[in-house]
Length: 109
Image (tube, rainbow, N blue to C red; front, side, top):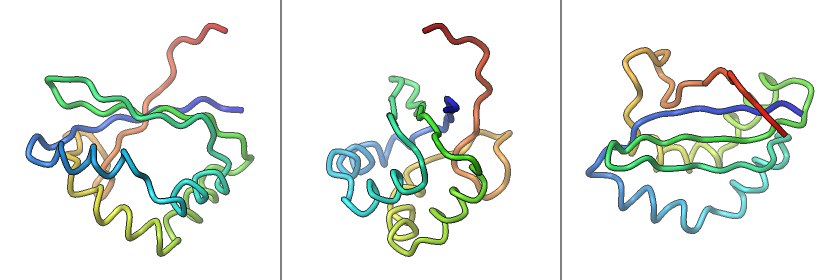
């Protein structure tokens, strides 16, 4: 298992929409997350800065293949078409990516 994190900003004018969407995530999205070996997935909001932090545990063996599978899913693409416009990537985030992956610097069980 690998712990993973990511961060992005939430556009203030899209905050209510983003929270509404995540209060009732589509069952197909949740199923795809699980099918791609992602467990214990949470998104946190830091206010008032509107920074989103995502955390999950990856239980697979090929994260790139699993994320490519997720990105190819039409249902996921439809979901991202709603959620991605709510996000504002950091200036250093790779082009076309709404989230920046984070490096784990400490863990304690």
